[in-house]
Length: 345
Ligand SMILES: *[C@@H]1O[C@H](CO)[C@@H](O)[C@H](O)[C@H]1NC(C)=O
Ligand SMILES: *[C@@H]1O[C@H](CO)[C@@H](O)[C@H](O)[C@H]1NC(C)=O
Ligand SMILES: *[C@@H]1O[C@H](CO)[C@@H](O)[C@H](O)[C@H]1NC(C)=O
Ligand SMILES: *[C@@H]1O[C@H](CO)[C@@H](O)[C@H](O)[C@H]1NC(C)=O
Ligand SMILES: *[C@@H]1O[C@H](CO)[C@@H](O)[C@H](O)[C@H]1NC(C)=O
Ligand SMILES: *[C@@H]1O[C@H](CO)[C@@H](O)[C@H](O)[C@H]1NC(C)=O
Ligand SMILES: *[C@@H]1O[C@H](CO)[C@@H](O)[C@H](O)[C@H]1NC(C)=O
Image (cartoon, rainbow, N blue to C red; front, side, top):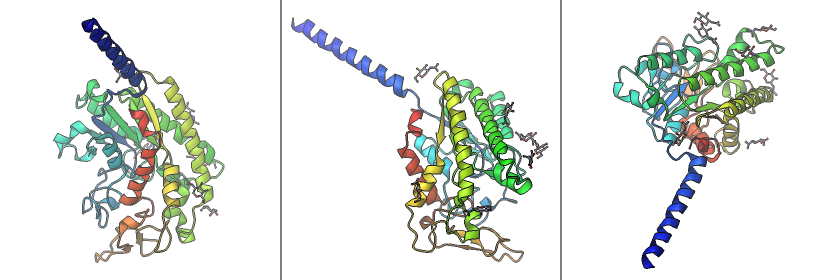
């Protein structure tokens, strides 16, 4: 009696454990443990691919908060990639251009993003996203990464608006804008599908941040307020992107997931709660002395042509386009509280 009673209890316990764990499995895939991060896009995620000769990211005062000197990030310190890597529990991946100097880091994934680029050609000479994905594909062909390597990996894709800046610079037609928006999102979707087909099953793509709040736009109003015209266009981009990603998720098989990170709401919500004692919260920490100069610019006599604030962490924006490390950290704290990143597990 005693014996079979114990047996029954064990049986019930076993049943309960199996039942609970299978339920959890269906919802959460507890076996998914990312080991690699692959990154594509622009300066919001680039951690060192641009070259020292032509990039502000390699000039003082970039990098002054982290790692303490310019290191190719477009900020005073860490950028979105570093925080997403932290969330996943992996090392921030080595920049593609530095892969040969840090071969031991290749196993954590790779960062193919180049500041200034878009899904289409921009004024940047650096590789657009198609070419960045070509680099990734070539490494797979060379067996640097195998299929098994790629299963537990995550991709982060940033399209932060360089295509639009370039359009405004070279075409600028308001009538043409709606169809250009559609083609940018369309091309983004093509890129996401390619990354998926190469074997990465968890793909995060950034929604567009409020471009109308960037210092390069608010400069003309002395950083007083966001430009609602630009932000309305961002709204169109983001709804098209959400639609495209919803379609991808409907078609997705084999545990694949496409996730949109809502940079619009997270930027807005941080900006709404930023109190600024020194001037305006939209004002960047580092600005050129006049409109010809930007953060990091020195003249032929090596005289600085920019002003940098004393305490970068009290500014949301670092330069005319990019958040400070503190800005990114605050955005990351918002993103962590949304359901988006939780879909990875
Ligand atoms: C990306 O760049 C390559 C080479 O510079 C070019 O051939 C290609 O058309 C570009 N892709 C897009 C989508 O613009
Ligand atoms: C993109 O730029 C490259 C040169 O950087 C050029 O060869 C290519 O034709 C361009 N592609 C498009 C679609 O403009
Ligand atoms: C530039 O704008 C015109 C409309 O004014 C449009 O027909 C053309 O396709 C646009 N070019 C690009 C590259 O978007
Ligand atoms: C979207 O991409 C597809 C496939 O490349 C193309 O046939 C279609 O014309 C594109 N649509 C727009 C609005 O660019
Ligand atoms: C937004 O920017 C555009 C282009 O610079 C300008 O024409 C428009 O007046 C601005 N709108 C607001 C509300 O500031
Ligand atoms: C989906 O994920 C689960 C848990 O990680 C795994 O056991 C299963 O093999 C995966 N299915 C496919 C088709 O990859
Ligand atoms: C930010 O504040 C504006 C104006 O007060 C409001 O319209 C908007 O909804 C707020 N956004 C967020 C994300 O809190």
